[in-house]
Every structure is written in structure tokens, then in C-alpha cells.
Length: 255
Image (cartoon, rainbow, N blue to C red; front, top):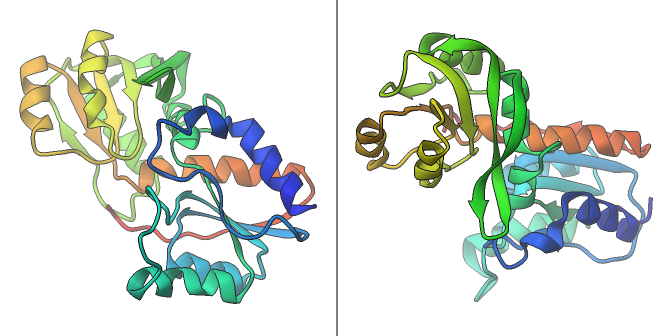
């Protein structure tokens, strides 16, 4: 497949342009020329030297990641920044990134993947960011106890063996669940306003303990990496449908 066609297809499916003014990440093609053919695509959560080298070893023409290398641009390409980018340039490995567009996509996104794990019904966009959303909410087919929901997350998420942290300040039975993957505790107030029984996210800030306790809501901290593998895996399945060879690179951080 032509590289330009590949990028255009992903940009259209993920609505990349709609998040251009909302996301610090430079979404879309971050490194690489518009020319060339793509036969093999690698996927990973993080765009870092370890995944770059693994993608090169796998013979990939492009690496698709959730976290990229440009967060507002570069002042200088030196030191650690140069060392990180160099393998891409030297091996003609393109880097395509989708951050918030992949968090909030209601079918392919990270939050949608967590909602699949929990088998939530009556789903709706959640996590307002300007005119867009970065998460999803839904209703449990059968109410969870807090222990059951934590066990489900620990069983089905790639936590690297780490336990799911639980701030158990809400109801004993959980029906309404709000999800914002990664670092999503900034949407705690929206979850409370929506009368959610629980907010599921990746990692928390110190203040969320007291905020959740005062608001009377359960918060599950399942790991930043663990909650954000779903989007790139869904894109891998999509790209396979386009007839391209793929490989997934697992580099769990346990965080």
C-alpha cells in the first residue's frame, strides 16, 4: 500500500484533524516521507527507542503508536531526542501516532476496549474535551461488586503483574461506569455529575484520593499502559483487513 494512502486512511478513520487544536501530541505521521510503499506495520503503545528497534528487527515499514515523540514540537534535535529519533531516520521507519483521537474513538479507542472487557451496555461518549470526548461510559449488564470489577480488570488487562489500585469510596454495587484511560482523573467531577458509581482510569494524582472520598465515588487505577493497549490492537486488526502484514510489540511498563 502507498504510504500516503495508509496515512490518509488512518487519519480519516480516527478523525485526526478534529483533535488538532485539543491535543499536545502531533497526531498523524510524525516521522517519515510521503513516498514509499508499506507492506508490514508494527504496533506499540509507546514510541520509544525500544519499540523503534523492535519494529526495525521485525522488518516493519511503519510503526503505529499511541504515544509519540512530539508533544508541542522540538527546540533542538540533540542529546536524548536525537538518540531516540536516529533509528527511525537511519532505517527509513515511519512513525504514525494517534493520541487523544485513539483514546476517544467510540469503536476503536482505548476506553471502548476497556468497556468491552467490562461488557458494558448503553454506551455513550464521556470525558469532554472541547467539542470532543476522550472516554466512554456505560452500564454493567449485571452489577459488579468492587472486588469483582477489580478482578475483571486484573484478569483482562496487561498490567504487568501489578495490582489494580482501588479507591473504594462509592457504592458497594457498581452499575454505571465512566472510563478515561491513561491519566484520566481530571474527569472525576464529570463522572460524579453523571452519577457514575465508578471511574476507571490508568493512573491518579495525589489529590484524587480526597476528591473521590468527598464525592463518594469508586476510582479504579488499572495502570496507564494497561488501559491503553486496546486502541493500537484495534488498529492492528483494522490494518490486517487492509491486507498488510502486522506485528504487535509488547513493552509493558507496569505503570
